[in-house]
Figure 1: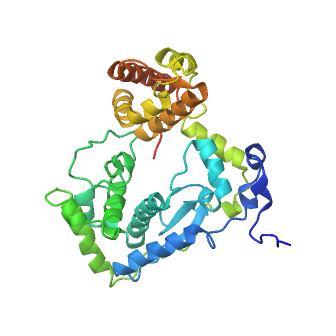
Figure 2 (figure 1 turned 90 degrees about the vertical axis):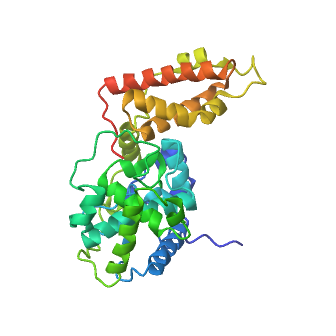
Figure 3 (figure 1 turned 30 degrees about the horizontal axis):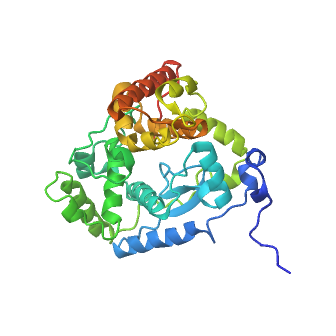
Length: 344
């Protein structure tokens, strides 16, 4: 007779609609015993290899990825602590941010860069400000990245280093920290090498120093959050515009053809995926909206194309142009209705 799983939780067998009514504090999920624990250990090993012996960031489960001001630690999204929660996140948000080990480690290194900045108050240094800018500058409502700029590293998607001085530092640190990243050869001759060399020199200096900020506080942990997952996702979906986009089925049926009539043609979802980057950039240039928000919208459109079994028929270049117009109009309608642009 099989023994009950001591790690099983009563909500794991619930349908999505039922799970959404569970409160955060009732989830009883922890980092220990999950893949998160192993990945944090891997991160600590990378820090040790860089001889940052006195830098010991701490981690907890929160709503999303972030490193709070004044706390040299990192909140890791709760939905990465259990496969059932990851499935709910995908159903609600169309993707699971950090859902693969490589993606997880990329984000974790970035957030730990923020934690290092906080621990040693690096952004107050003159050379830091000369290279990266002023961390006190407000985050912009949106930014228009320059994809071919050699003054920034490329680490997270959408050229995130270009969004703000603090993100520039965190991205540079993440590239420097990653084992075998080959940053010296990859960025040789680029102006961004000044930033990477600075981080390298900083590490040598900080290896002999204890952090100035040593708070071990957990900012807004889910263990003390009494909101339901339904309340959380209602706010999150509204923030990303997933529930507010205008109805566009008629536009999709105008652009694409019914699968029953063209069973051998590529699916509309495949077509959109193939041209996703091109469309995302063009719509961002035309609307001023974050590429991340546009990408979320594209994911929703592709899913709707699958549900409607639509096919891409005709000249690809013409279809891309017409699709671009449709997406731009949809995003402009969304912005015109008064929804704010998203801070990443």
